[in-house]
Length: 230
Image 1: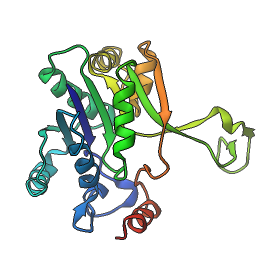
Image 2: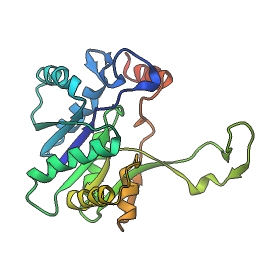
Image 3: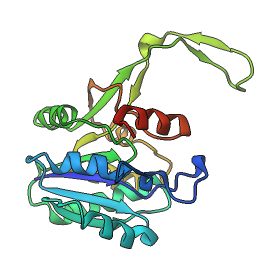
Image 4: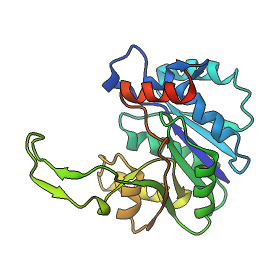
C-alpha cells in the first residue's frame, strides 16, 4: 500500500490570522484542499491520512464531504509538535499496513502547488530507496550570521539544498525511526529526513519544484493567489 499523510494540525501563528492558514479559502477551495485533490487524483495511492487539530475535525469533515474524494480517508489528531503529529499518522498507517514494503508520503498541507510529476517521481524512487526527499539548489548567495546583524562568514552555496515535501519513506522504516526517537527522548525534530539519517537510512534526493513552496507569510499567500489567479 501507499499512504499519503497531509499535515493539517499547524496553527499558522506567524501570520496571526483568526484561522490557520491552511483553511484560507481561495477560488472556493481552502489551501489544504489543493494538495488533497492532487493526491486524490493519483491512483497509486491507497489511503490519505489527514492529521488535524481536534477542534478543526468537524470543519474538515464538512469540507471534504463536498470534494468528491475517491480515496479512503483517515483522520487522526495531531500532537503538540510536528514530530508527534507525524508519528500519530504513522501509527494509523502502520495499523492498516500488511506489507513491509508499504510506503508513506508526508506532505505539508500548506504546499498547495505540489504536482503529479513530483509525487509520482518520489513513489517511483521509493521502489529502491527507504527515504526520498525533493530539494532545490540554492540560487542566492549564502552567509552565516550568528546574531543576524553582521556577516560572520560567507558560505559555499553549492553545498546546500532546500528541502521540500512530500518526503517519501518505507513505512516500516520511518515508523521504527520515530519509535527510536521517542524511546531516546529525542523530541525536537522538525524534518523526518533527520530521523531517517540518525537511524542509518540513506535519503535519496530528487529535484524539487520552484512553485512547490510552503505558504508561511503573507508574501507567500500573495504569490500563490497570483499563480492561480485568485
